[in-house]
Amino acid sequence: MKVLVSVKRVVDYNVKVRIKSDGTGVDVVNVKMSMNPFDEIAVEEAVRLKEAGVVSEVVAVSCGVAQAQETLRTALAIGADRAVLIESSEDLQPLAVAKLLKALVDREQPSLVLLGKQAIDDDSNQTGQMLAALANLPQATFASKVVVAGGKATVSREVDGGAETLSLTLPAVVTTDLRLNEPRYVTLPNIMKAKKKPLETIKPEDLGVDVTPRLKTLKVAEPPRRCAGVTVPDVKTLVEKLKTEAKVI
Ligand code: AMP
Image (cartoon, rainbow, N blue to C red; front, top):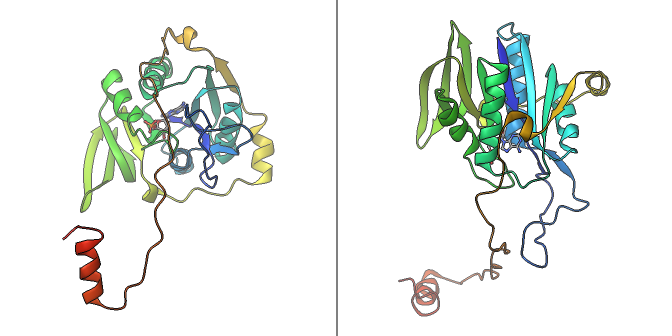
């Protein structure tokens, strides 16, 4: 059984992002880039399934610029067997990525496709759902537990107020939530081993996919600064201020 895992190269979650002065987007020049945290969880889950003997091959895929090879090498160091970079310098929006992944699913025929629930740069939370629709596959999003057995995946998913359990017939698409697992630290020997694992580079044209952006960003702006809070001496003053200053009661 083969698992396809998608990994996106994003601005590292520890970096405080800066908006470009012309308001056209986020400044990524000289900024630390890393694997999207939810994708790290997806790779970890795929590798655990392989270690448990449920899966025989883990293929990592990334769509984007040539530097996304580094992200794929990290996936290989965690334990993926081989990687595919779909290289493009275009601004790849969720629909374009979903189309590219669909084309790769057609080529690779995986039993399970694991994605993050969202990319922390665009926060779209769309790609997995779009892929499932395009490929006509069952989907379980926000997974906090995945059990694969007998041609089915049993997935607990995080919903408002609790967990929902779904049974999916494979092949299927699953997107990962934070509580699914805790990704391992990548060791130096595994980083060295990852350098020798196969990494194939293809272009969207090779898959016959048009990745032209459909959405246009009009403006990116910082959120308004919050004013400092004040401590009030008693409830009477608080109520007074809520009435006369905040005007909320
Ligand atoms: P999004 O819909 O943009 O929030 O992304 C959801 C998930 O789709 C991510 O966690 C990734 O697993 C996958 N994904 C999105 N964009 C890419 C990309 N450029 N390359 C690989 N995977 C991606």
